[in-house]
Image (tube, rainbow, N blue to C red; front, side, top):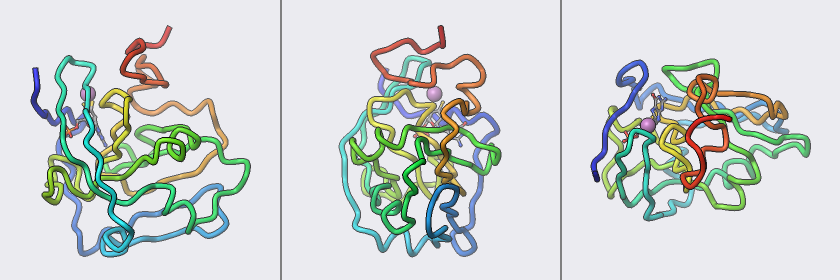
Length: 176
Ligand SMILES: Nc1nc2c(c(=O)[nH]1)N[C@H]1C(S)=C(S)[C@@H](COP(=O)(O)O)O[C@H]1N2
Ligand SMILES: [Mo]
């Protein structure tokens, strides 16, 4: 089945582009507060990538936006940072996380656009994390804060409810 579903745990989150800011903090030298215009000002990278939901559907799109490593370079990541926690409008205490090395090694982007169109609210405006080769639940939407952390035991919303924290699309969907 190839289609794109919303799968939002608390429904579509409405974020106002005029007042939106993205906080980048935690284990960084220079915490950032980025506006939507500042996200648009980073070099925009395009990647053709599949989103695979554990419920059995997938969706291929051209995703376009800044590389997370470019934003991290501006923030100055401290050497003890190991993971990146995505705080979202629906789960402000931390919706999901990814390893810092995975993000840098795979040039992970945050997509402001999906097939050349600005992400609408139901797709995750202002952006969706393009978590290449990870299950859809790692593709955080409605992100308001990105926290660099050393807490490798952190579990996000789905991961804390039995879904695998590695979330490799070729691996098990559930934790052992
Ligand atoms: N903040 C947040 N991000 C989220 C979710 C959510 O409930 N809240 N659902 C996830 C799940 S389970 C999937 S499959 C994808 C769906 O993304 P799509 O809208 O691009 O199809 O978003 C992911 N990102
Ligand atoms: Mo999903």
